[in-house]
Length: 368
Image (cartoon, rainbow, N blue to C red; front, top):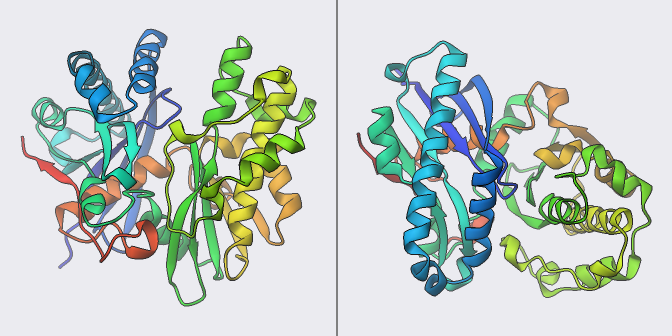
């Protein structure tokens, strides 16, 4: 008889706005039931502290210099993740006794897989102790140690969603988070995945720096501007976009030249078009165009981005929400699912996803 696990998945992405939390019930294989989702917001003071630490964490040397400050931030971060656990437990009507595992991704402060590391902060032992629950963390390390990029990590969950929805293959899911990534399943059920390029990160940063807003709601600022074709063309000519997949990006590598010469609306339009063009370029580079692409992540709410993608691709484009999946919580659900796979010693990455040498398990178990 199959055992089903209740797992909480926690995700704090590059937007650094708070913690997404999900509870799922799964066997870590083909069965998945979503129990609940919730979000807790970081206070602005903490968000500022976290942004500052991430911007200063440019190398292992810098991280070692900042170690005392990072430890303080890490403790606060873990407490907010604990708060997310408490919130979703109360919301769902379950208790911690019912929860078998917590999948704790932590906060990425530096991703350099080609140099052999990806660093996430978050104290899994502390979280395990205060929740009295086994915690799985450090999902990327084993993949990187075995020649992989350590990212993206969500494709196996994306594959499960596409299978559950019984969509005609080939099909794809594109997640527009801080960075955008694609999971593509071909006619033979072979799965590939890679980071396509920027998502929301550059847009949010631009809007925050140039206005009182924190992001471009519904893409209205971008829609009111005129994008700079030269900047877009120059950006997509970078080496990364000529590289074969699998491949992954760190937000620190997303540099855009000559942007500061532009007005708020034109810069916003230009950055949105970088997301559009890099996603469309990635789709164009696939051997066969998907029949359908489902969009998840915060960037799916940017109508300017989605409308422009629709104009450029020759397939059906839908938001994942149209298929009864909440597009805000796909990643937190994925880490709940991956924590079960990790606990069962199942692989969580594949050569076609991260470039790892062989199917690879991963994650560190912290027992309470």
